[in-house]
Length: 68
Image (cartoon, rainbow, N blue to C red; front, top):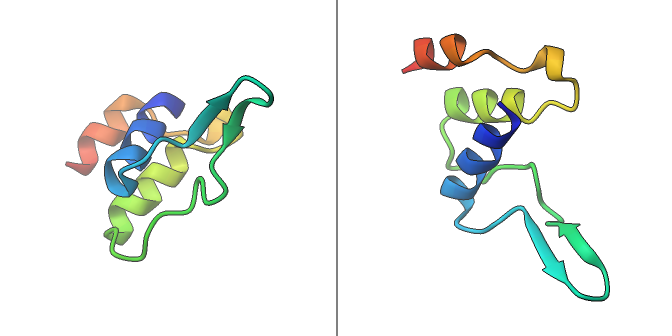
């Protein structure tokens, strides 16, 4: 589910949440996981739930499908 949240974040922001440089490796975008204000609240809540640091707090795919 985390990967689904990352892809959803990329769709709404138009950029990847992580960049790579040889000196620093993979670096998280400064604004990740905040979403732009134009994102509908239902979608924003779902995306942020998928990005939860606690896997037990992430929705199941059945729960995600029920949102659509």
